[in-house]
Image 1 (spheres, rainbow, N blue to C red):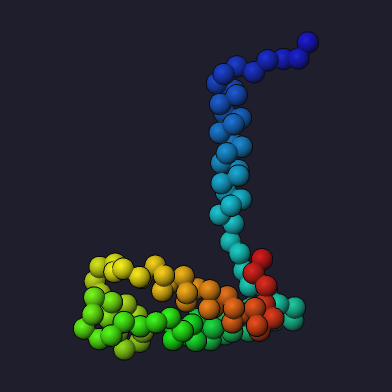
Image 2 (image 1 turned 30 degrees about the vertical axis):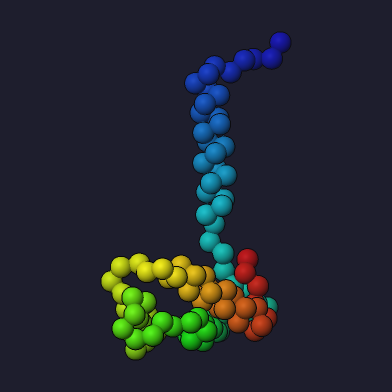
Length: 105
């Protein structure tokens, strides 16, 4: 006859399984490329990020979505479209890194 688990034991097992699943989903992913050392990856990522800042549309000066001279949002509160701009810059950075032969792992 198989041993039975108490309700408390079952909750503990399920809770631990859920935590393990969540933790694996939060794992850090890094850009990798055969033959590239950490300095090369960092330099290429910085260059791709800098290039992506200019790829997203910038709102006209004086609007609620104005940006600073460095391309950063100038509004003190979140504005409509700020999420879309972040996503576009992130995707542009990913495309740039992929074109340079990197994979995100």
